[in-house]
Length: 305
Image 1 (tube, rainbow, N blue to C red):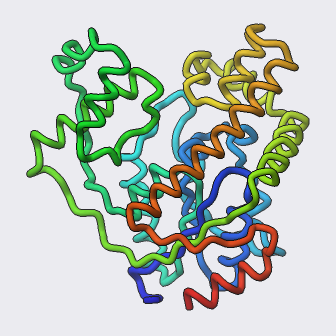
Image 2: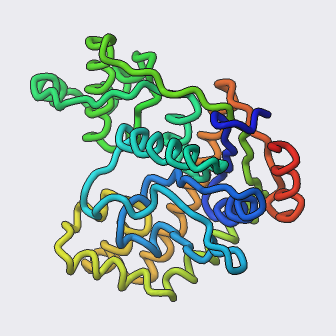
């Protein structure tokens, strides 16, 4: 592999597989810096619920530099366009300091936006198009979106507003091809952290209990008390959705725990499905046994130096 300025190590995997710690251990040995690819860790103050394990970035006495964490205000909407812009800025900054880059995360959309070099294009609101789409059912909107060839900018199409937004983006792309910019070419070696499904389930459940004991409910309450709308917190999904519902007395503690645990398991399955789709589209992922951390460190270093 080319170890020059246009090279990058990528470490991905579903939630609760220890990919961040692995990335930091590799970074400590090769003098690299880590760029996060996590769609929720961009938000300040959303720490426990998004799994910002800051201790992962401390290897012995060495603090591993990290990027694209805590860069947006909670309550705002951060998207893939903004992520691409921020990624390029961080990537170039690291290169200018002659450091290696490790991209690490589990948000498939953000990872693909970098690995496939999607066009950088900020899409304005098209109110006329939105009005015309409003009478359509969710199913009809889904069919319309599937007819597009550029599905890479879709976020979560289970939400009607996001579904309409995705159609709006594709419509704009078709009508403004002259505005598109090329994403810089980056030579990547991609590694995925794997555990058997039953082990991932155990790790998710164990981690959820630890987060609840560590103050996750107080974190969500603090966000609400700071003025962030409850519906906005629900929009962020998973921990923020179900804990908010618990705080609003829409769920009992036991219901919240059960539903949230199930939702995170389902989320991990969707991540795995996304990574498999990435492989089918031509992205080569070298899968690693998550239990063999030291072997994985050596394997990554040997493959990328």
